[in-house]
Every structure is written in C-alpha cells, then in structure tokens.
Image (cartoon, rainbow, N blue to C red; front, top):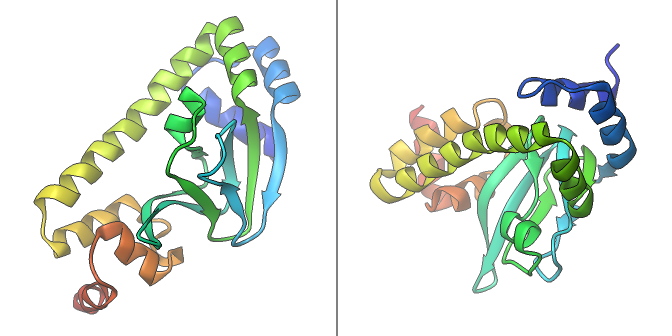
Length: 191
C-alpha cells in the first residue's frame, strides 16, 4: 500500500528526478494536515505563508464582492493550493480558501520552499513545469469567461472539472461561471 508521503513523492517524480537527499528534505519539511468540511484554509485578512498539496478532498478559492462570495476556482486531489500573490509577495490578497469536503493535505511553508529552491535546482524545474499547466488552465478560463456563451462556459466547466464537478455545490458553480443559478439549472437539464 502506498503511503501518503510516497504519494506526494510520486507526484514530484512526474516532473523531476527525486534524489534521496531531496526526498529526505521533503520529508522533514512537509507536514500533514486534515481540514474539516467548511474550514477556512486561507483568510484574505492574513498573509499566505503556506502552500498545501491536496491528497484527498476538494477546496474552493473565492473572494467577496459586495458581501457576495465569488468562486474563482476549485482544487482537488494532486493539486497545490495557496493564494499565489500573497504567498509570493508576502502581502494580503483578496482570496479566501475553504474546504468543500474533509480535506487531507501536505503543507509546505514559504521559507521551506525557498530553502528547497536554493539547495535543489530540480525544485525550480518542478515549479516551472507544474505551473505551466496551471497557467494554461487560467488562460483558458479567462477566454471562456470573456468570449463564450453561458452554454459554452458550462461545457468548459464540465471539461475542466470533469472528475469533480458533481461534488461542487450548484450555487458555487454558478458563481464560478458568472451566471445565475437558474441559468445553470436550465443548462444542466439540457445535458
């Protein structure tokens, strides 16, 4: 049976060769955390100093506009989650991150990540390669939001979140798509 730590090492190994010394450093710097459903991982009123690798569960990144929660994106198994601007610039940002399900994670502190980058050049390669897919996803999302119909946005949502869309509450999905819940209900019935 694969351990939780072996699971994250397998993830890194998809991008880089994980030496024994890097494995040892990761094991000493990663900590395991479980969050309950509804628990806040990141508060917009605080600087983000940790990044979380999701082993199991589903989280949502959102912001508040006129007191209304606007879902920005969802993250699930085998993805990292943090508030990127806050994490990198060490400033407050607009994003909250909460758990839509009980979520098991590995946590890496920003200072530990800096150490790994400084001492293991392959970690910078990992960051560059893994962030490429995130960047591509965000560019597709921007295009979808700006230039497509509600139906096309919904189709893009289903494709992007094909393994988890059924785990996302309807109101949060509508907020992510920038459409009303009634429009989303209609689109779902048409499928």
